[in-house]
Each structure stands twice: as structure tokens, then as C-alpha cells.
Image (cartoon, rainbow, N blue to C red; front, side):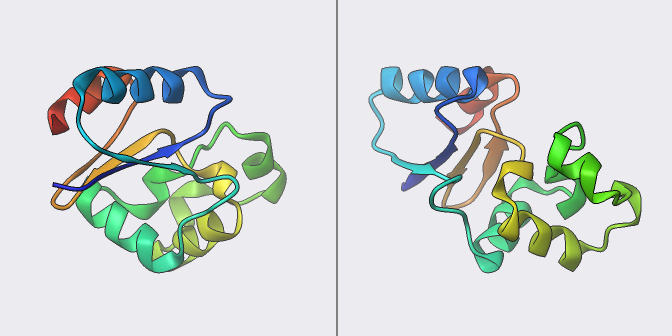
Length: 115
């Protein structure tokens, strides 16, 4: 099973989720998504594995999102994906992804669902 964590080292929840993965001794890839953002296709795959609407992956309280003046509830699936691909800081974090499933590590203990 391959596993990836979309990680922001400045986020405490992301660091906690990373520690859970490290302690579990599973192999995984760390993707610092602010410097290596997912493509729109990768976001589509992540969202499908999460089983949520694309707009639900957006951090609404992020200042950059507020400055855009976009209403989250009117964002289309495609426009939400494009927005996150262009502004990865707006993505919820951390996200841990396997071949079949993904979870948002808020709380970090959600990661245990994949182990």
C-alpha cells in the first residue's frame, strides 16, 4: 500500500499527523504541498478518496480566501479545484492518502483510520 501525506511543516496538526505516521513504521511519502502543490487531477483523486465536495476541502477561515470574496457555498466543483491548485494554502491539512482512501488529519488521530 502506498501512502502520502500532504504536509505543512508550520502546522501543528500536520506535524502531529506526521508523527503518528512515523511512529507506525509504515512507509510513506511526505509532500510539502505549499512548495509542491497537487495538480488539478491529483486534487480530483484526493477529493474522490475523501468522499467530500471539493469546496469542503477549502479552508474558509484562511485570510487569502476571505480576500478573494468568494462564497464557498457557490463555488462549483471545478472552480474549487482550480482555486486550490493555484492557491494550495487554501487546502485543509494535513491530508493522508492511500491507494483507496484519504483522510484529513483534523484531528490528527483520523490518520489511524488508514493504518
